[in-house]
Amino acid sequence: MAENNNANVVAEEAVAIVPVEDKPCTDKEAGGSGGGDVPATKNKNPFLEINNLDKALATMTLIFSIPILGFIVWIFYVRYSDCESILKLPSFQVEIGIALIFLFLISNGVVFLRSRHPVLGLLIVMVPLLLIFIIGLALVGAYKMESRSVAASPKWLRLKVFDEAHWQDIKSCIYDTGACDDLVSRTLMLKSYDFSLKKLTSIEAGCCTPATICEMEYVNATFWTKKEGVPNPSSPYVSECNLWDNDRGNLCYNCFSCKTGFLKTLQAKWWKLGVFLILASLLLFLAHLILFLSSVVKQFRS
Image 1 (cartoon, rainbow, N blue to C red):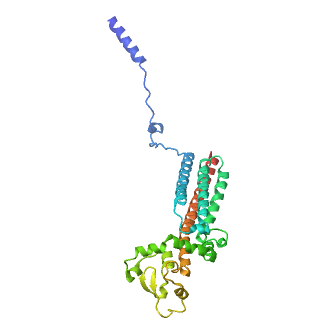
Image 2 (cartoon, rainbow, N blue to C red):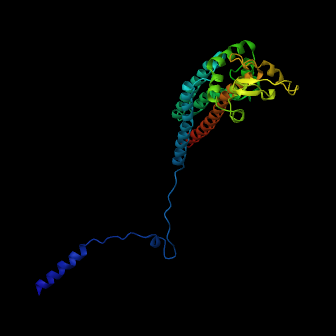
Image 3 (cartoon, rainbow, N blue to C red):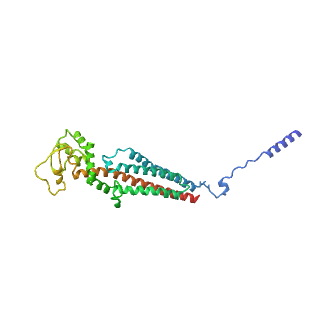
C-alpha cells in the first residue's frame, strides 16, 4: 500500500514539472471577440523605387548613345560621294565623326559620374549636344544664318556648285568617274520607250541626257538627234538644248540640269546626316535632363 502511495506521489510531481507550451495569440484573439482578421501590409520603400528608376534612365541613356557609335563607324568607312573632295567635304565629314566620338565619350562619362556631380555633368554634356544640334539644323537648311558659314549646308553647296571655278573641276571629275559610260553599258539594248521608263540618278538625268523639253530623238543613252524648231521658247531649259553635244566629253556637262543633278546628290546625303544629328542630340538631351532630375531627387531624399 505504501509503495502505491509513493508511486502516485512521483507521478504527480512529474506532471507538475512538465512545461506548459504557450500558444501563439492569433489576431482574432488579440483583437477580442468582435475584431476581424487584420491583413498584413507590406510597406514600400520610395527610395528603392527612385533608385530603380535612376538605373533605368541611365540604361536608356546608354542605349540612345549606341546609334551614335554606329554612325561614327559609317562616317569613317562610308564611300564619299563622287567629286566631294573638290569641295573639301570629306575633311568636314571626318570632323563631324570626331565630334561624335567626343559626344559619345562625354555622354557615357556623365552617366557614370551622375551621382557625384549631377549639375556639372549636365552642363558639360549640354555644350556638345547644342553644337551638334545647331550643325544638324544647318545641314537640313532650317537655320537661316548658315548660308556662308557652315559647310555642306544647302545654301553653301549651291554657292560652291554654281561657282564657275569649282564647276570646271567638278564636271571633269564627273567625266572621269565614268557615270555616263556606265549608263550606256547598262542601257545599250534598250529601246526608246524602255529607256524612258528607266529610273536614272540625278547626275545621269542631268549630265548624260538632254532635257525632256528638247524633244530629241533617242539613239542610245548619250546619243540623241535634234529636231528642227525650238520647243516651248518660254521654258528655262530651251537654252540647254543648244548646249547638248553628242561628244562623250561634252554631252550636257555645261547644262544647268547637270549642276542641279550634282547638287541634289550632295544635298540628299548631307540632309540625311543633318536629320540624324538633330534626332540624336534631342534624344540625348531629353535623356540626360530626365536623368539629372532623377539624380537630384535621389540625393534630396537620401
